[in-house]
Length: 106
Image (cartoon, rainbow, N blue to C red; front, side, top):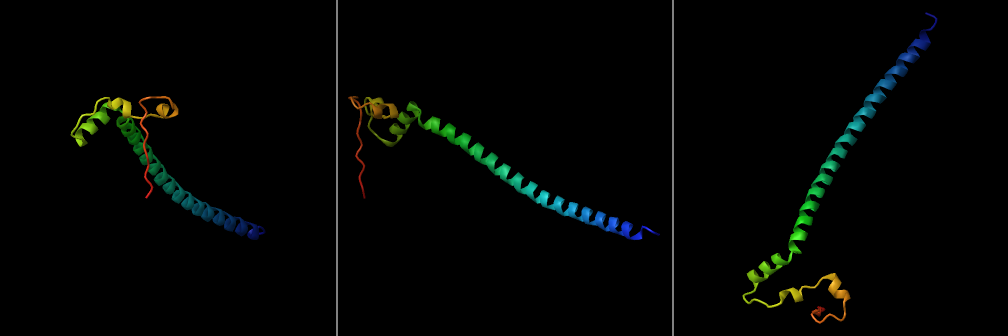
């Protein structure tokens, strides 16, 4: 039993390594669950963004805007297309059909 101290030292070292591995494994499992929740939230946000893109393209559709106008207003405007302003119309100062909007301050 000449190597008794070395054997005990190696056994204690192995126990320390095993318990630290279990501890680190437990921490990584918690991180894995947190990452799964974050990925699920990201996926929900991506789906919501896709829905918002569809709604945005639908709301920018001219026919849809005409239908909304007919629902909320009893009169039918002629040349409704001329009153819808896009960014390209804003940059064109000499456009005769450009409608200026005055913003009131409270």
